[in-house]
Length: 115
Image 1 (tube, rainbow, N blue to C red):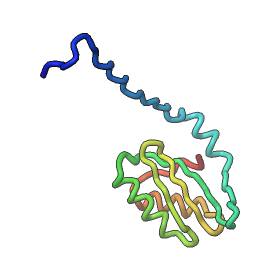
Image 2 (cartoon, rainbow, N blue to C red):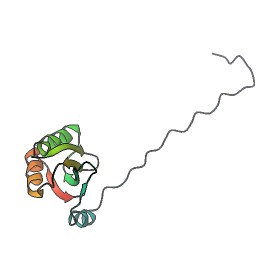
Image 3 (tube, rainbow, N blue to C red):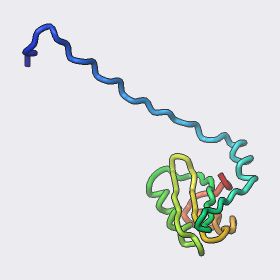
Image 4 (spheres, one colour):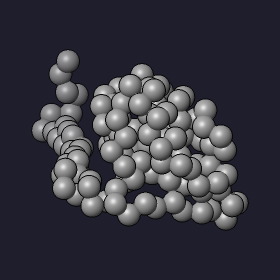
């Protein structure tokens, strides 16, 4: 279709947004991070712990890990992220790392340690 007003130009399309990817932590960095366990208490008295899990690649993986870890006593919420390998767990009391490791193992993945 012809432009009705001659001599006018259409504005150039806006450039597409770019995405920035962050590289996953190097193997030696993960070991350092996992050596210092961190559990953060919230104002409500709940504790948030973040773990590093390997092998998750999709939403199904996230669901499997979240389901198994979510069955541990005192756990109120679990968020697993395949893209980063991080699993964030909110619980009423500090969790035993061996129990979390067993739950992740039951789901078919490996707990590297705390993130």
